Image (cartoon, rainbow, N blue to C red):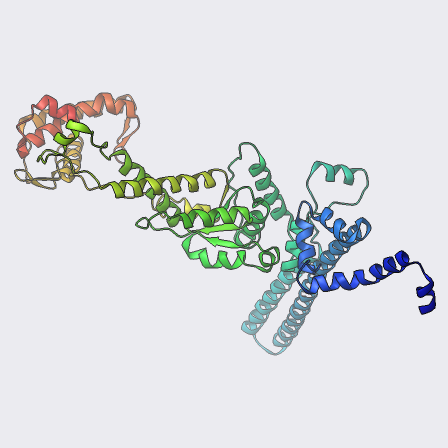
Length: 506
């Protein structure tokens, strides 16, 4: 061989030498980190990528790339099927155990019926019935597991056409990968709901949806993580909103083996209203969108951020204009007790800068998708925080007065109820303050209006007073109630305002 190598022409020897060194050079390049090794996690990530097949073809050739894709699909199908077989075997063991319990209960009941009285026979029959109920439940669970079918096929028009023509089904790689990582099989109800949400989010403009699933159907553990995985495509931000009590559990679900395999990070969005809006917050959200990650947030953080945006907008809108220049500016800078104090320029600049950052975050949310888990809790009118203070403190009308005292603002509604009770029953609840002549006349007019409204079916008096028409209230009940309120306010000492103006104000 050495003699033939020596007799060969120089270009041929160089070509064979380069061919023999190519595998070693490729291996050395992989060991040095110059090219990625085709490990199983990398192959599974390439399987989900839109250019994954082309990338595999470039690395290993078209024929080997097709073989790798088929082998990966077969691996995931067999792995999930193995997990399914284990669940079936566990169900068989449960049925056998319950069958043994039922046989023992029947034998004990038979012996008790031969040697014991009626009480023992009844207890034996009850034990048999309970054992049969447990056996039926175990058998039903086993039947459900045995009859479970796969639903991870693609739902595109092309895939349906291939299946209709008798071709093989096209698998949805993301659902197949979820089954491979979790060891479970997606149920038909879960897949249908996922496709419904994905179709709604893919419309232009996207459509909002709200669906209900029973407890234990996989809302938090299956639907939410897989939906965020499908929708987070690197172009839109996906935010998962959960109650504060489920925050840690939802975070652990998002950091499941599937997310670790796909390198999909979960970003936590925490914000307090008193904290400033900085560029780091915006950069974190933009990174989550670019990397296809999911932003996990409690509702209080989102509400606090929106209120911060409104507060900054209000602060800038109420800021006085900049002082004029020249002589007018010199005169305006002179101190005067009537001048409104100006906010510092640095504070106004900071508010403007924070408002611009808030606008960037709102644009990210506006172009993204918001997934709400436990929506009945998040949007409950009594459990969700809907009332928030905004802006500086301002005095309320009739709240506190040096001449009238405190609390008239809150006494007025009770006085209106007293007028209604006087018109309905002939006596008021507040017996300490006798009504004036004008108040009694207003009560009589209110009684006549209610009597006419009852005849016209505008109010209901049984079992209690019920108002049936808002328009009738405005035209018939509101004028005498206003006269009653004015009479009480005048009696309390408000005499500087004419009664007509006071009635219009009330």
